[in-house]
Image (cartoon, rainbow over all chains, first blue to last red):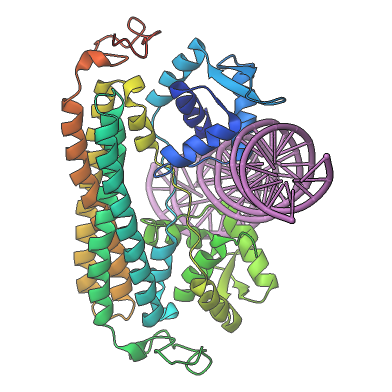
Length: 205
Length: 205
DNA sequence: GTTAGAAATATCTAACAGATACAAGGAGCC
DNA sequence: GGCTCCTTGTATCTGTTAGATATTTCTAAC
């Protein structure tokens, strides 16, 4: 049945926790699911209209004139259960950091090192964030039936990030084994323009 | 300058290693960069045409009539270096597994456990793949200047996958702490249809 | 020699991200 | 009061991308 809209699942899921306006929906998805999911306005509005037509959500009077709050219906809840049970559509990978490192010989050792250090700093920042979040929620939301599921997703983030940190250190060690002059930009302080232009690709007789 | 086509970078990068037809390009991207990058035909052909017009690649006689092999030019190499130096455009996260687990109370404990076990099986499979790949390349490509960079990207896959495995075990432990009857589908052996339809959402007096 | 499949080119649709435009109401400021 | 800025809120448009699909030619098996 071709390609399914993933947005539908996220929207129904968010509405299953609380009725909201489209705007609040985006905020909720960004703030709560943000570590592993994202939606844009361009998707949310058409999806809400479609869901309304199918009777999966209902439009109610919003907090101000011209605004509407959306409420999930029984058929919407059933639909959500259905969507959650569908096989996972894997999103094709697109890791800009790894793409740059793969062509690291063209990019140059120095820039690779910078990218790696930056990645580690990012990872350490979000690791602290995950830890704080988990600690807070465990206290504030203790006993909530959703808590273990939420903690699961946070744990996923934590482990992923820890993996990144471990990897960066290994990658930096690998980088240290490469002579600087083997690159397109061997650490020259001026931008570039001297060593650039050839890299004979191969020359083993 | 708004949103840049990431495809351009991957295409130029692949052509920087070897001249290829568009078809071979897709194959190479899938097989070599597949662990962290993906491209589709729908992107590759227009991108090649644009790159040709800009003089970054040249079209040569292909291996059969009507087919063409693309060769990167000097200006293309320079362009690649430029693109690699651009700031990384982060792809918005979209993890279908975590989305399902987050709404795990709606999905049901049993299905969550299935998803987690499946994820671990996948992870173990690709972990073995990464290890084998790293071992092979270290021998076969020993001394190639690109080797350390390739090993870096493989190491990233390894660490990420190892993180998934560690996480799954933690998540399964969390799941075990949830009583089965707290869910929408408490382990009934028949598909569904009996317990489905309400879930009073809360009922603690 | 005919057919099965791989190599190869090409296009179309739907999904999606991000930017942007716009309106209305509240908060602070002069 | 009038001004501006910020937040809430709705809505659309463009460019990017994934994946499906149609079509042709070459190769190899039968």
